[in-house]
Length: 306
Image (cartoon, rainbow, N blue to C red):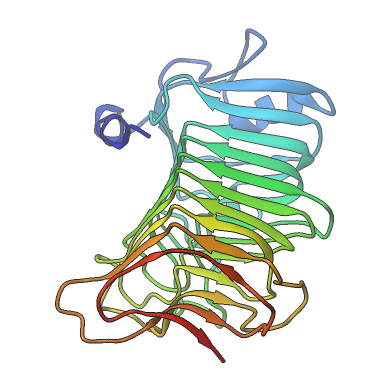
């Protein structure tokens, strides 16, 4: 992901949506995102989104919709949440979000997000989630697949604005969650990635907690899971609310078996000067985890069972 280009785009875009019809579906222009979404009905369409900063939101009630920035990083949604939930509330047959930026989401229950997924498979790519209570929240009790790739999550999470914590990503389904080639940094509470699903793939990501504050785990699989956690880099920061571990398995329940969960080829370090001694992996499942070779820095314990 070319983070420098996305960052430049954030400053290059004026603080208003450009043109009379910033949202286009099959050549037809719409003044608002909700009008564009509603036009799709139960069909399949791509909504092209022009460069601009938009204080509006949309609810997808059906169909297969791709929300695509004409130029990645230049279509910025901020602050306005539908149903007191998120910029995009998704309950269609499937959704794709490509190249959008979400920032500044806060709602009354503490779960203000860029995306709330409630139904249908979801793919998110080349997106940015910034300075909000949550990045992506939701899921459905089916075999849903959620895929996140080449995206950035920064300045997310809270445990002091509402009774329940919010996280960078908090997803739950009975299918699969895939997180790849993405960056997590500067957390402000909760976990960077929290997933309640039977199968996960979390690979080739960067977790940089050096600028975090009041954060907890890098990866939390509270109900257990199988799958693969590999080729990620982790740097644990000093300003932790709970700094006892980086990856935690089945801390809340043993809903899903964790036997064979592979954790391999990761690089984990502490911030320079950090005197704490957390565990890289903490397992509450007591299942057999397939822990391979990981590069563990000074001060980190490789594994603990609790």
